[in-house]
Length: 218
Image (cartoon, rainbow, N blue to C red; front, top):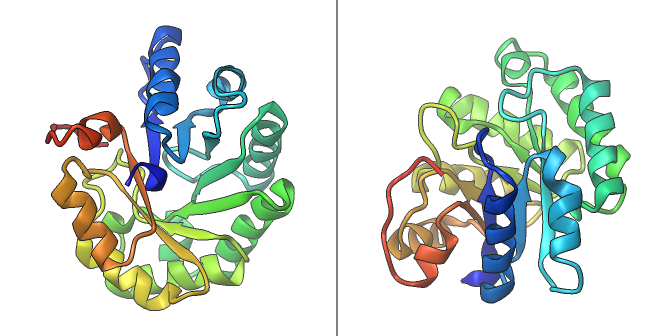
C-alpha cells in the first residue's frame, strides 16, 4: 500500500519543520511521492534526494481558475525545482460552461510544459454532475495527461468509491485514477482500490500504515 500513497501536506500554515517531518516519514515508509505546494518543492526535493520517493507539486491549487499560461509556467518552474510529478486543478467553471476545448487545451499546455513527467488532473468531482465527471475524464484523456484525480480535499467533500468507479469506467486502461480527500482508514484505501484507483492522495499516510483511522479532509 505504501507505494500507492502520495504523502500530502497542502495546508496554508504549514512551516518548514512540518515539511522536514513529512519527508522523514516518506523516507521511513517509502511512499510513492510527497505532495506539496510549489514554494516547498525545492526543499522537499533536497530532503528526499536519493530516497526513491518522488516529489509531486500542485498547480493552480486549489481552484484551477488561473490562466493557462500561469499554470504552464508554474508547472515548468516546479519541474525545474525538482518535482517529478504534477497535480493540476482543472478549470471547473469552464467545464460547466461547456467550454470543452478550452479545458483540453488548458491541460495540454501543462503537459507540454512538463514533458515526460507524470501529470494528474484534479477534476473536483464533488462540484460536478455525473455527466460532467465523464466529460472531465475524457478531457484528461484527450489532453494526453496520465491520471484523473477526484478531489483537492479543499472543497465540499473528497473522494467517494462511486466517483472512482465512474472515472475508471471512462479511463479504462488509457489513464489511471487517483483518489484523494477523505481517505482516512485502511478500509477507505481498499474501497478506492477496488473501485479502480491506482494512487491514493492523503495526509494520513503514516496513520494508514499503522492501521489507525484519523479525522480530517485530506
